[in-house]
Image (cartoon, rainbow, N blue to C red; front, side, top):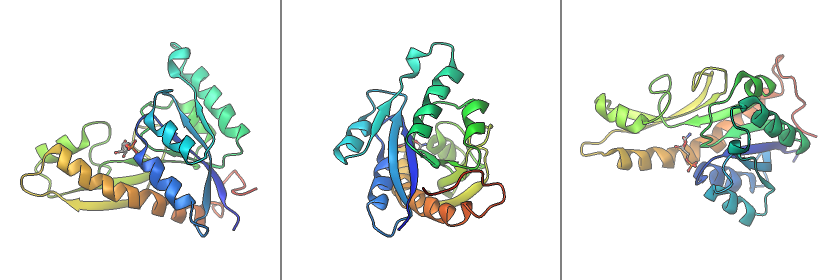
Length: 204
Ligand code: GRF
């Protein structure tokens, strides 16, 4: 099958990346990982990706003091060099500038641990508990300039149980994230190339 080359951008442990690695290993899955890239050379996920035989690259943001665009230009060049068509943010902990978002508009996805538009930003599980919500979950969305604001592709819900802590809730949501991201990416790839706004040929 003609698989779309994707990049996964991480900053830390990379468990969502790992879910994408496992999905991409299936012959019928419509994507393959062309590059795992991190702003953090010490991200544990980089080693996981290496052990899976994937190309990895760290572009340390600290080497670009006060130059976010310079950092993003280096990332963009690496993505283009690797032939990437779709970028999946998976625990990438840098707020992007309009430069990189614009370069990958309509071709960049993110996973967020809340039922957006509820709780963009950090500490989503704490905020859901503090609000007394009975349902919580995760969202895969397209990336636009506003943080966690882009069009929603898919969501998965979990119940909030009595006695839940932020940690227990995070664990339950994370299990859903690992199902949701591969499913949402596959669904996105099935229609993305057909949209009039699609500027990139999706496979080689
Ligand atoms: C996940 O909860 C994801 O939704 C959020 O950051 C966390 C990353 O976890 N954007 P991991 O690195 O994928 O394990």
